[in-house]
Length: 224
Ligand code: NI
Image (cartoon, rainbow, N blue to C red; front, side, top):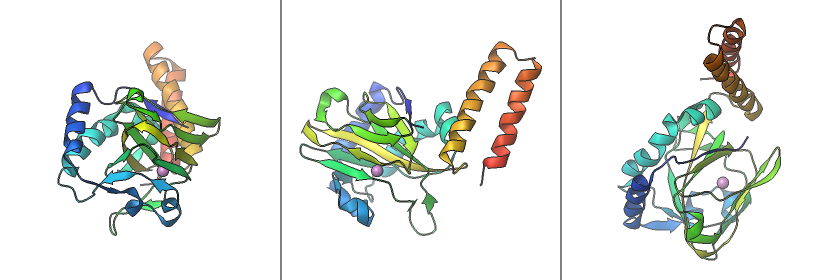
């Protein structure tokens, strides 16, 4: 299930992030890629030891983590730090799946959910669409600045070549309490149903049953 969160960041936050990134040094993105992904990866990333990292992480991931849609659909247990990537003219990221295990020794996490936060808008670059293979076929994603998208990390995906301008994104991963993407999708549907019932008929027996089913399904399927 591919999901988008519109307006995760507002104009002021975007300006602050872009200004901080303007001062940062970027390195070859292949340095952070697994062996297979290295062959198809061609972009630049902010150096991971950058002093701005903590501030940038708070700005981008704090809001994502707290977002009710992200909480309900991704059910995050662990969240990676954000990687800031830029693609200039001629750069792309060929088709790949993300590495299954990431993070430093002792702080490792399984990647269940992959996220991209768009820091530049469609007007800032040509090309550069994110393409994700989903259960509904290929989906092409090129969102306004400040919007976010997330999808199961096992999905094949790619970034088309940027032909002009610059594509600036933050990417991050989450280990979910629910490993199976199908189960996460079912739980999210159930969440929507029980929230809707709660709003229209808070005292109905069906509402109580939907609520209990949701809670007990989370108990059945989650691992901590
Ligand atoms: Ni990827």
